[in-house]
Image 1 (cartoon, rainbow, N blue to C red):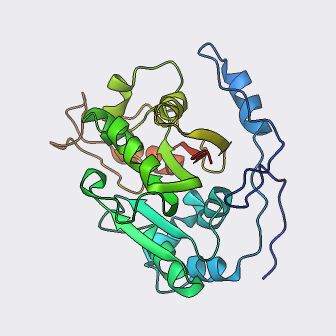
Image 2: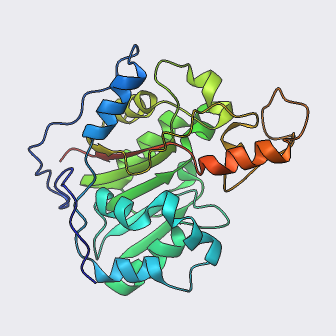
Length: 275
């Protein structure tokens, strides 16, 4: 099935960096809501290259129905295209989790295209590949946890070592407003885009491109039980493992209000190991 091509955000070929388009400017700490809206509108989505195997992996009925229901929020085909996924790559996913939302796409795609999918839960104990051999490392919704346990820097260093020159570090992460202390926002599930970019650059990565594919302007990042208030987790009452100052459960009206927001506002970033 042929998809309509959207405006190109950056060249997607691996491992070469072929885009002549300048990266969007970093948001300033005093950016107004109007300036933020204009900046995000200028960040164009990627061109959707035709990849029948990826289309089939995303559309497969072997994926759990709950996974496929989230595609409207997580845009798997578009996001993986933006990151540069293609047949034959060695892809490492960090902390895929029990549900394996990305794994349920990446693993069958790798099997169908001669690639390799490697799930890694403890990067400091091993990346599952030889140094300098991974084509892509995917990190989804994890950096808030790493910040709280001082794992961000050593993990980034492990990723840099595992990737081949020109390899991609692909990141999807709940995004806080700029200028906030990650010590304060990480317990709620959010960190700023500049925090993630700084951490990756400190390990030696170059920011290759960033996209607003997974932005959600309806998410104001201020919820009684952090990002977990929103779908799909939908925390509606105090929990021991969720930071909150609210001692009472949500009312039905409040629950409906947070459900209407949908999933979180997320950054979608592509870094490269120079080479």
